[in-house]
Length: 231
Image (cartoon, rainbow, N blue to C red; front, side, top):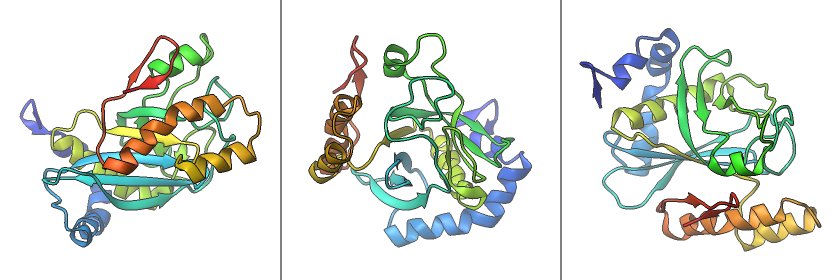
């Protein structure tokens, strides 16, 4: 993607931390692609996170029709509990269907990738005046609602995101779940959180999780007037 004569990648490389990340980690990222048998050029990216398992997954596809899981990063630490973010200051990591809405090469947490909270569902279901915001996947090892994966690993994920955007992918999806929402995972949530006010919300997320698990494809997700997700 070319903007005013300079590519997104070239623009990002003007920043010291991004340049250093490429110098240190691009070969590592390319090796992930070689191991998976996927082309490093022209790929699309999908980011998926699980709060209970405390992992961030990077899925990619190039010429193939379906996404393949490329690499998994561990949360360095976490905050809040299982359940969606609903108010500023609640320390919750959001849950839902988001996109990457900001690249911050000058982050206070080394490098950071913005999560589009509050989305249209959150704006209906969260506190109307103070839903919170500024949610990122970032470096370092501190959080009050973001997902930190260390300075070392954010370099790799940041490179993946820059390359995907440079390939023309304007909407990089980020799905954040309380846990794996297959039958076993959902049963565990029900058992561990009986009577939780979040069970209906998790049940609403379950078909989206299962659809991707079954197809390894991403269908467009919409939000109705009640803040519920649907295909």
